[in-house]
Image 1 (cartoon, one colour):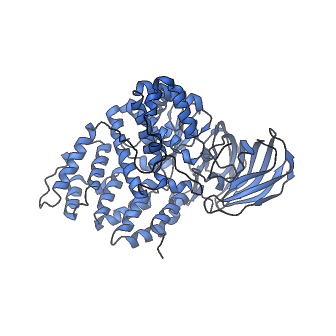
Image 2: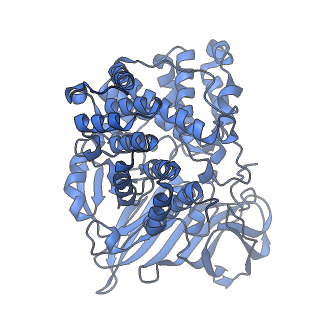
Image 3: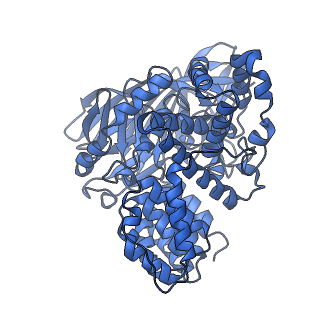
Length: 608
């Protein structure tokens, strides 16, 4: 019996093996129109199939050319509407069959964002991209929208010239249909969950950046993106050394328009990344190491449902930092873990220390997984694995286990219990007593911060902490004796930690804010991570000259990591609340539907 509280489909009675998408991209009406053919297998004797849908128009359902009766269930707030399909005759367990569903998406389909030409870099052509994680695949196609079922897929996507389609699959052909339209064909032969089905269509150009990697962007950004991401192959090769051979054939990158709501999305064969990574100095490309790590942790070994999401993200953070440790040194890796711990503390504080959603394995019955999204599965998960590594004797014991974990569960969707059982099985009686010392309940089921605080190397953090302390001590001085050389040798990560430490002290008085900006010029910095933390310091201090810079930042990119906290902070200032609300309302259509919904909950709930 498999369990997923976030699906309406009858997953214990029938399961999808393969699906074929045949869609026409209609920018005029902002819909995807066509059909999906689901290849299914009956797990028990059945006479109906129930699928997940949200904001779809279903026109017909057929089997072997014969029309079938279907009806929708009642709409639920979180999970859309169940699509009940009557098979017309009972099928016995083990029977394989196909259903063809003709349908189209709607403007309300949350998986798809349609961009006007004005919202792109080139300003000439429209653009669309999808984002199916966590449970938005059901608004892209009728499906069993759950990570516990993995399937292969193929697709035929019709687009108008000169646009190009790319997907989370291998391109297997292009066909000129007429003077105006072209067909792009794709195949994904490695089994994936529904949330990894992905499509983007736009004026795209590609440039090879490695033996198995191409970066895709709008032509105007291609040169910068190719330079920024040219170390991609090093990340893949290091992942292979740590784990198992890369299974997906291609590892391409798609740099999306600015409204993409995440740093990256690990769609197989084609990672989606935010343009906020284009810092011009490769200082932010470790996000790519994270997405590459998902090739094993998440895409190959997948969470059984969203209550076990940490198995995707905690493991991926752990492998990402293993990769960066190999490439940049252990001190750099541990320094990054310090930044992660700070993010975890902030999110636990925001949710509330007793909030059940801050447990590593939360209960999500009746809960939209988007509402539980935070750094908890990432950073609490990472710290859990780091703690286990230390308990069992260090990397020399843990790293061989990592490979064994991937080999054991590749192609499967697993629960935390299955992960834990294999952990004990792998280490056997030799390490059982050590594993038994771990506070399993505290780590997995208790809300708040982890029961153990790991100690990380403080070498790179020391100078950041000392400089922040100097600024706090000088907060009420008439003269601020600081120099640009204070941070000249700081890495981007050190500047981030310095600013985070400053924000942990009481808000600086405005003369100190002015002095800091005069000497370090943070307001004019292009790097998005530094820019975000500087604006946060200013908003906490109610420093109103930063307001227009905040508005500019939250309206030129839609990455939720930045826009949600900045909107909340601006909304909480004495004179910024109306500006926050007006800015969001005026720019709502710019944001991806997932981001827009979350920002609305953050700052408009309870407002008139």
